[in-house]
Length: 312
Image (cartoon, rainbow, N blue to C red):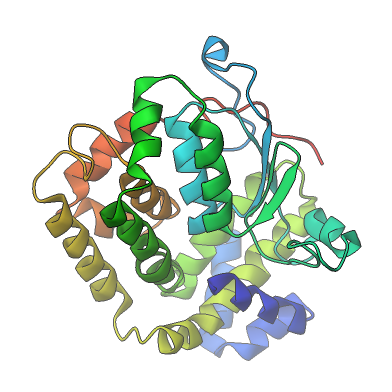
């Protein structure tokens, strides 16, 4: 989907070329953003967190997720795991080189992940799975073995046709609105890609090239993304989507009633991808702001049951 826009990056060789492709005003803005970047890089992100409650982690199946931190589909999967306090590791993929997932090129041609160049990719036990929907299905299957009541209710909700419809909506209608919002201006795009500065496994060159090149490429691609998904006003489109979700909630604490169901977690996970960005204000000022706050409390912080991020 939107990750396809990352392919533009490889067609742009240097930082200077990025600036040249944009307007002179944008190039000047870029330099100003670079000079002021340190302040935004110091904002906390969710890297290298450790399990705060080791006793809650049983001898479960190991899960490893290859991801981009701001990918809504990756965040959707992690929201389910965080809610269930299910331990997992994440590997941050370099958007430019994608070297962390080069192993897919060595897979047999008949393997579903052969030469797969998108995220998320997950290793669930011994099964390597691509595509967030398939990953989620595998995780729900594993979770169905758990005895905790809230997890049993969550797995049961996955069979509900209404829940399945909203899970598809989160993927196909909500998630596609986020990148056009995150990259609405060069400044906002630069802010969104600041997460790379805190990836401990990225070199200084990786951080600088991904931050500047990534922000520029996605900003330049924003118009194509809007055209592809027939978005005229990205802020208004997101506000309307949130209003639609508010109508579905119908003043209930959660779509699942007194506790979140799978649709609640998928919608929340997709939206959590914009945390800390200018787009977050759209959520805060929408009819779902109270629901979003309740979801934060129910799910907890990202990686609260996550083992230390794996060094690459």
